[in-house]
Amino acid sequence: MVFLAALQGLPTLSIGLIGGAIILLHNTLDSITVRPGNASYVLWTILHQPGPLFFHGHIVTMVLYAVVPWIGVIAVGYAFGPVVVLAPERRQRIACGLGALFLAAFAALRLLHGYGDRFVFGRMATASKTAMSFLEVEKYPPSLQYLLATFGVLLFLYALLDRAVQRDWLKPVRSFFETFGRVPFFYYVLHIYTLHAAALLLTAAEGMNWRFWLQPAAVFIDHLRGWGFNLPGVYLVWLLLVLALYLPCKWFASVKARRRDWWLSYL
Image (cartoon, rainbow, N blue to C red; front, side, top):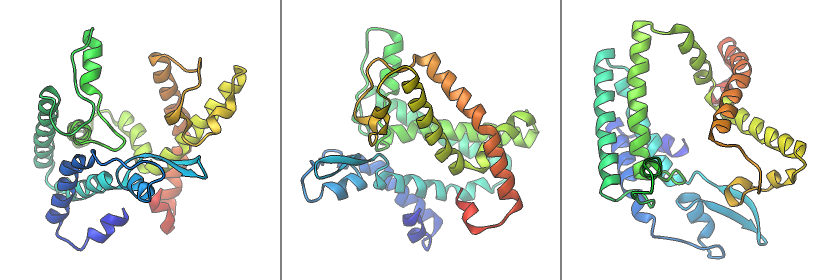
């Protein structure tokens, strides 16, 4: 957002082109690897190579959201703004057209083992494993292929939900999801601490090493042996979390609707 603020003096099209260029080209930097102890390690970790940061040989924090590719993402999102204020039918057509283009490009790059992601697609022993290989793309940092896939799906969902609002479809369902959309950062922060607290409590209840979860970015550097859920269990946890946070998010959305404090706009 700080970099976007610096770009705002440029024409919207120029901002979009800069963002698109970053998304298209940042994977050319993947071959540059800086190891801990190198003078430029901290800077490069923050800019493009997610990883742990050390102090006297101990991990003190974990950089996951490398800055460079996300500047491209936020710039492209900003440049999409003028489309949102077009007539509904036109913006829906544009969204679907771009979504189809992005997904087609993603599929082509995956099938042809093309540029844009370090995870190469391969045929596996079963159809389900092959499908997972096809969809296994890198988020940290977000690769070109990851962004093509997520942007493509997002644009189709945008067009669908835009049509739902226009036609007044499924109003109670829309209202439920709009509650989270009004307080996205509030939900984001709250869900991290809620899940972390739940992991601590469940691990302690099972008599396991709950202190494991107090390590910086523990889940990204190791695994707690013998602990965890299968895929249906993970989806159940996700569903219960969303339901549990609905009322807090609804309360905070009402606070934002009643008050105009400047800091509320950031949550």
